[in-house]
Length: 223
Image 1: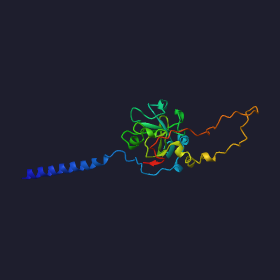
Image 2: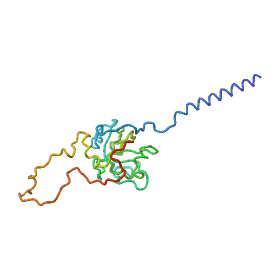
Image 3: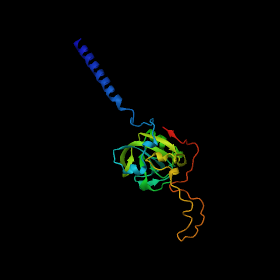
Image 4: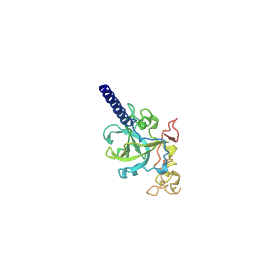
């Protein structure tokens, strides 16, 4: 009888230990808990690509820039300034110029495998995002040898250049296009030798770039 009672006691202890182990293991699942896209991002809180490249690593920032491409390799010299045609891109590149093709002036953002940001911001699945203006919040880290964001915490698709050009003045106190001083009508009508300059037609203001406005992308969309 004593042997039976002892066996039962040992069995109960074993079951109790097993349940305790299950309770300890349970909280470890669930994936990335830091990723959140429900907050509202504003241009007034954003810094430019140029400024983000100069800030100290470790700062949390909201970076605003045009989605110009991705690095198709281990360095920024492998940058492709287009949408991804073969597979989901693992990163994206932001620039101040929506037609940028210079890897020296881009800001890289990692799109982590299995994350919501890769699902929603890769241009293989969403080619319409190429050249749109994005706001991305995260902590500055060294990525591809320069400042970048490896773990985006929030992002917002604002729109194409023609949709956002009048709003960009809200970022960093930049002048809006309408604030640019106008040249006197009589100035510039002569060439350097004092002769009448030929009429070359309208000139596109510096800093303004042609934009292909793809249909179906709202001027503002927050995730």
